[in-house]
Image (cartoon, rainbow, N blue to C red; front, top):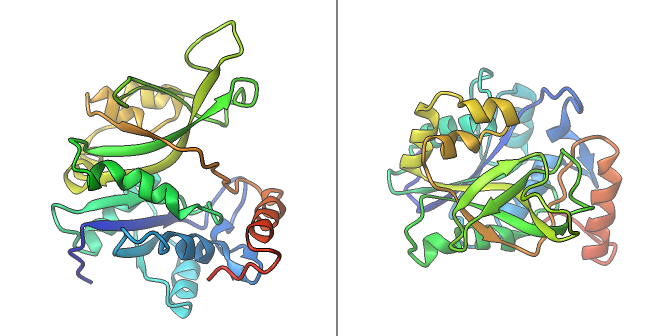
Length: 253
């Protein structure tokens, strides 16, 4: 497979999950979850090619039957970004490509979020990696399952943490990180070449590997909410959102 388009979306999905085994194949309104993610991603007109990257034959064969582009990757990857890197190589992504890492458990992904993520590249800003964040009340964001980020006035990420940052006694807002990333291909290669860093291991956040290596990440603000599926209980939540968005007639197409 060969693709030389500038913007390429890759959705890493794996069958194994301690909290929710088989999550990508979960039936949501008649379609597996990964198909909903794919269908939302291809609505972003900037993305000229989108595919799944998996390590499981069940996901691979289901995707092929549904005409969803898919590549088979190693089971040994420690992160989704590592899987995205292998997939980018498999499809022969050009050196000047922008590779978008799209979370495979976001069936109600807003396509505009991908437009916002890619905006700095479209406007030819001097960025190498972009990600998203949205403001949130500190009480709402207190869970360690929500990753927080602080960034400079120019959007350069300063730190990511599961704890509340910055510290404040006042009920001010903070910014919650949304795990979508866009990489210039060369920086995706660089990420893969780096060992896990000290801060990455402490916080269990792979993006800190880049900051530890003095590689800047540009943060784009969004007002959209991220609705990830972490457990079976989240399925009803996303079904409700789908029906509300589409007047009870969501088809996922």
